Length: 220
Image 1 (cartoon, one colour):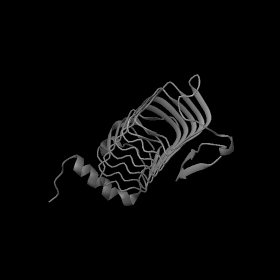
Image 2 (cartoon, rainbow, N blue to C red):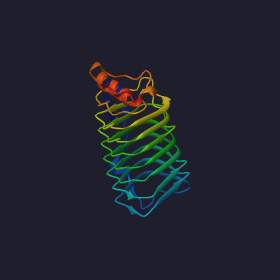
Image 3 (cartoon, rainbow, N blue to C red):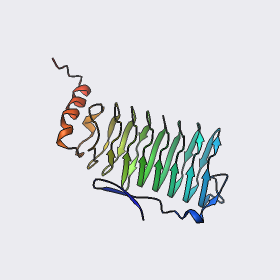
Image 4 (spheres, helix red, strand yellow):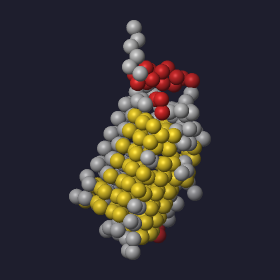
């Protein structure tokens, strides 16, 4: 099985046999389940989806400005080249899921459990992650998270690498062992929530700058 690794954090990627995938024109599935599927280049006005299990599939080139997803279970699913700006996703579990080159500006993720999930080169500016819980490995690599917000999340053991974290805010939650090496931390907000994270020595000045901004300290 293929993996994506950032320093000491590894995510197991979706294990898909492309020859065995069937093209579908909907993600609703039959009897609330969809397996071994390929969903390609759909342009939708809206995407309401609830109570569905998506297993072993690819979603490529999906575009919609009104996706409302809830109570979903995903296992071994790969999203690539999708524009899901304005996405609202709640009360779901994602296992072995990869998002690659996706645009999800202003998306909201609430009470999502993630296990072996990677976000790679995704644009997630202004996104809100509310009570996101890492039950396993999670990686954000090469992502833009400008002015994103993590509120009450448990991202223990997660890894961020080469991400735009300018004005990214951490508001409460648990981040023990979260690996922030390889990122500019000077523009973070809510540094006080980041207890027991991992950084390297060269990042300390940037972290101090972020803390000073949080505390509204004036430096003369």
